[in-house]
Image 1: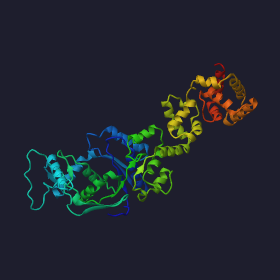
Image 2: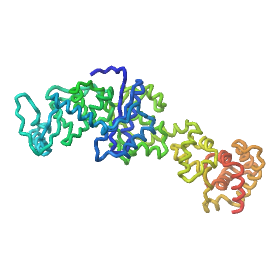
Image 3: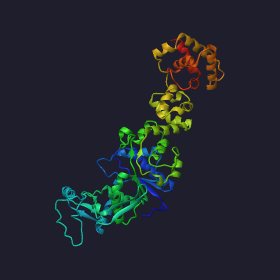
Image 4: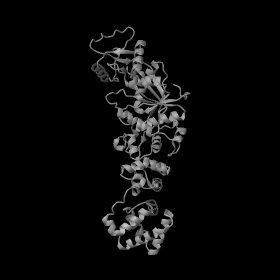
Length: 472
């Protein structure tokens, strides 16, 4: 199989809509998308929805939403396998005519008995070819009451090999592969067959997918060759493990990628983090989408399982938040403030983002911090009030308020200078003013830098709250 890059690279992401777009699927999609973009190729989205019992419209939408959120719009598709049934039946009829497939009337019970007999003899359990036509072979009488399956006439000898772009050369003995069912008794085609026809018709040149598909690959290669096609280059990605080294599951955070949107992660941060789960570019940990496209190469895909690290994801997300434009952050955080019951219009949201973003790991944390400015002050805890809003501290606050009214400009530098002047006039240290000032104006003992907080709250609000605390 050729290892050169074809003139037009065509990759595909082909999820089954039986659930949400999970992290492993998102990473597979990302690598396929990045490879196509790197080579100026075509990224195809195919929905493999032939499992009628488990496939749902909601799952299809969840996949589309997840890919849109991550910015992986397909160049072609989505294509739906259920809309291609006529094409699959046409190919099956062709294979039956050409002798590369045949009808098999063995019942499921008979096939299981064949496999049990093989196990008992120490052989690999497989269908024994009872209905496989061979020169000079007499087939059993066709049962009158039984609809047949269609089986692929798999090669009996030799090997099926490919040079996996992740794992290197892989070889299967064809004697280990039985004649695969490609159509059920009701005529519906099976997964491995549909995949082959789709990859052939859609001219897919590279398939990146999870290594749980390795056993399917030799079967798909043989069917492709029987149809006169050239197999794409395959790359099988190791799984993603949880922080404890076990298979990633819901308890590790293996939820829909859209759940990470709800939790306040930026899609560009998620793309960056997912890309590093099994791929690397030197020691670079942080890179843009454009750099990922420029650098992406299958030679740098890891052969080892990747490990999900929520702390690392938070670190990456915090970096992207810190380096985001304040107005852009404000637009992303605004709906989250509304969900918390706040009023985003009550304050200068971009300036609030500038104040808070250096210490935030998620958009949700930014929204919670912004409630300091977008909601009424919380009621001061009685114990804190008794401890810090004493007659002495109220006197200091009154003096601060009087001078604050006279400030020529209400901004952070002016307020910082006023705070220092107040401390000097009263001969006190910062906690003696800072804590009472925070409690009086926000209801909280701890806030970001109080001069910046007061500047964002505005002169009218601050003075109103300082006056109110004197009347407690």
